[in-house]
Image (cartoon, rainbow, N blue to C red; front, side, top):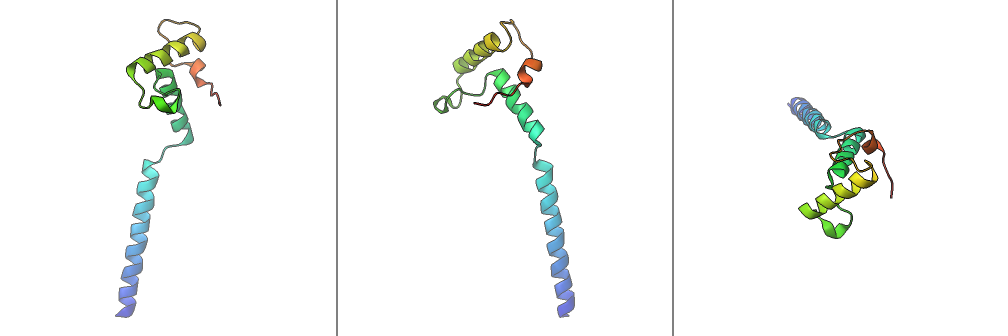
Length: 91
């Protein structure tokens, strides 16, 4: 009887561990996905320039877009996400 109980406990524990690890893996993102999201956010002007600007206001987002348009995209009127945005700058 004790052996049966021990077997059931071990089986339940192993199933719960497998279910937990499977759920955690399904929710994680790769480094490349996170980097792509950060680059897109920087392109869209959503990343604030200072900690005091969080969450960014619409005026700040527009200002960030203007700065990015002038510095990265060479003054393009409607810049799309392209090779210019693939460059990662470290501050």
